[in-house]
Length: 355
Image 1 (cartoon, one colour):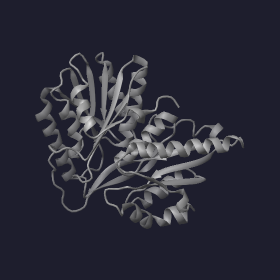
Image 2 (cartoon, one colour):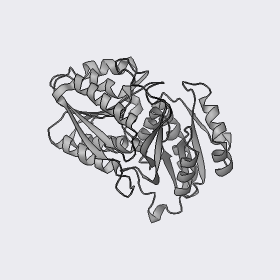
Image 3 (cartoon, rainbow, N blue to C red):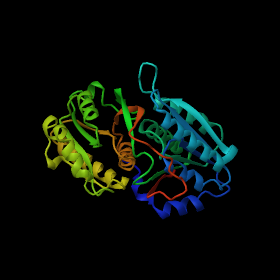
């Protein structure tokens, strides 16, 4: 492992102060975001709106199965962004899936962000993962970190999240084809790793039983599974409810016990990061003496902030990430546009600075 991303992490009010004071007029900054339906997706861009020399570039993820209500939310967020940023806002659509259902989000997003990055000589890049899907967000972060190291450019990863937002009542629909997230496959499918013991670290999420079964099968029934359980959580009983509802998966199908569970704060990416790092390092050390190869595979499914911890661990230790793409959404009941003016419950910033 090289640079530890959590040592320079900022949270809460420190992020607001950082966004307001760090990006001086002499900085030339590329801001990469996504037009989503969450109210939080506008917050970080609005904080930099008055800062000169910031190019605001937003991805619009196009999926094949989007209800009218979700499309209306996206249009409303775009209108809010344009009211804040004006002509400085540039939005480019990308296709999330090919016509045959193959996931393309990561490759398409990196192709677009490469064009933006190479159009101007930047001193800083801000990647706002608040509204992006994991399959878009993770590859773009990895790409920008690599560019930053190569060209001596500062990269800032920001994420905003609230305990309750307009996503309540919106259920994601996963595709039929799982895949490695673009840029995060490593050597897991090479001949040299064909006999490696597989440790699977996966987030638990409400209603994810079929997805978990599919991922477990796709990964060849990993020898060990460590589910991530949210604790502490905004709803204190959420972790217990998840374990009860998904007991057929982690007890019956995977044969795991409570000793295999990872409890991590659902609002703190650094907690998830450290838990994965400690587990991965301990396993590598214990198996090295027996000359047994192993691989730690991560699957982000649940709330965004814990998945950011997964991203940081995958980036730092070159761990593979396996995922089922979201191809659409289902609306349960009625949804309303939540005002984007309020401050999110949780704010995080991770900085990747050139040596």
